[in-house]
Length: 470
Ligand SMILES: NC(=O)c1ccc[n+]([C@@H]2O[C@H](COP(=O)([O-])OP(=O)(O)OC[C@H]3O[C@@H](n4cnc5c(N)ncnc54)[C@H](O)[C@@H]3O)[C@@H](O)[C@H]2O)c1
Image 1 (cartoon, rainbow, N blue to C red):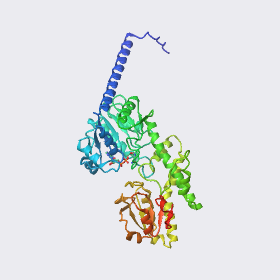
Image 2 (image 1 turned 90 degrees about the horizontal axis):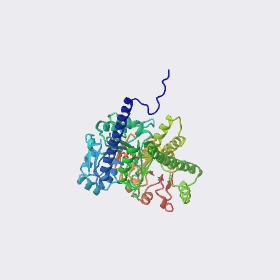
Image 3 (image 1 turned 180 degrees about the vertical axis):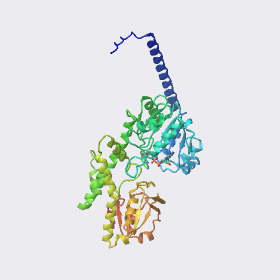
Image 4 (image 1 turned 90 degrees about the vertical axis):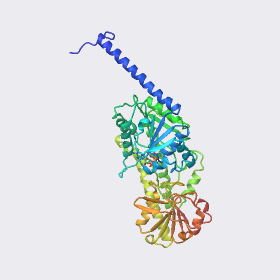
């Protein structure tokens, strides 16, 4: 039989006492949490907070410098022993960081590096900047994020903020990191704070750096959000809040998907223009004179680096959980991945015109990094082009002022010095990265023929008739 409902205000004395106790406990907990938040905010604002940065690469090292420059003590955790030693010797290895400035900050004791997590207890804020690659089947590979989070969980203490900056699918911070951190026995929003703030740095971009690129911040709850915004506002000119960690994760994967899709669009146009006998570069340059409604993207031998070829697939994978297909991502990936084969086919056509069998040709690849004026060759499409041409029997050499040697993609090679003798002894130069410190006029005047996949010879059009554009 159903019990009659007890009318409001008619609780037993025991129930009333329990309620008072419970209310008192809640108030005490809230006061404790508020004090914890305030202590961290004070440390952040008076710069006495110790900042931990896990992963001192393209993202982590410039960020460490920004924090140290305003007076924070930064302890980096870097598993690569050689990198950690270099940091402790004050030796910079990231192009976006100034050598002298770095040496000075290390000299003042503001930046140091460790190879393990034993100092995590000393840190007030821990920022994670580790790689987020894909598996061979294009699925997210969170082994670095998970491994680091497990280590942090061992040393986590109340009052710390953990912020993930690695690019990843929406849900990583909340669904993957939070349970691993709470396995420590501490609770998010009560004991520690957790946020996602994606890094948006564009390596090699002198105009937009870590400091003046607007930062997106989303916390797993209001306290996490508040301390994370305060933390990033210390060194970054503009911080934009979003309502959750998932929204912040989605912002970043969308941005990179936007680039991947638009690059794919112009890569497809390049293939069509090739069939139609049109110069895609001329078409695009003219299209981009429109002052509204269009944005410049350029074709090339494919996409490379640690972001554009990988990040959209994180979103594609997550979408499947919602029975949703991200058609643009799949199509963009397909087109961009087809570009090295298109370059190979175009190289064959050029060689045939020159009367040289591709299998007997000698080819110089000029620039193997994935991007102009950088030495980063991760996922570089130039390496794929090289491999394909080698499979066809060509002898392939390379020159890159930023990549003295590389071992990747099953290849291990050294950059050949760019000399007259070298250029006289090859059949074709393929420009795959348009570094500004290469004299393309000089190259074109000495080489038998040039296949330019980047429009690096744009200003030589009048004077050189031995250049074929993508
Ligand atoms: N490079 C970019 O242009 C860029 C831009 C925006 C965002 N991101 C994102 O930032 C993240 C980091 O990228 P990156 O380019 O700086 O990578 P990176 O490879 O240059 O640096 C990552 C560093 O983390 C270290 N590391 C890996 N596992 C570790 C561990 N368990 N403990 C300590 N250190 C560890 C590596 O040794 C390496 O030095 C990625 O998610 C990437 O997608 C990169």
